[in-house]
Length: 176
Image (cartoon, rainbow, N blue to C red; front, side, top):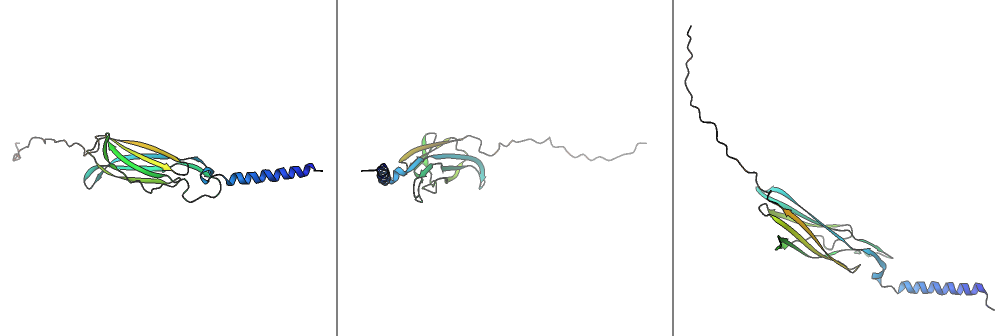
């Protein structure tokens, strides 16, 4: 005769064993939850460098991912790999950047920048392709900087002086 306590203990042991088998069968990538994201920003400040007016351009790419790992956490978990980093000016190719460090750790920021002649005007656009292996995510971030025509020496004005006055010799005299 079976007792109900034996059946309950056997069922609990079987259920616990199945749970252990179920967890161990999950692939490692399935044990992360969350999302990968990148925040791209930039600034352009007019400065005088070596006697020339230039736009000091700075770009930042911050890894704003929120990834939680179940179990042990490898050191590179949540890193975002930066792919192509293309600059255009008014839609025309203008070069590339090299945002560093790459890959970008969770919570870290990669930066790059440099001078652009102050005579350059228009929209300077940075397009960054990125990926995150932990979440199988990819994305494209775009940031526009508007360079107006204000980065130059102030206009100079020419003033004409008052008409020249000739010195006249005056001799004081007493009349009285």
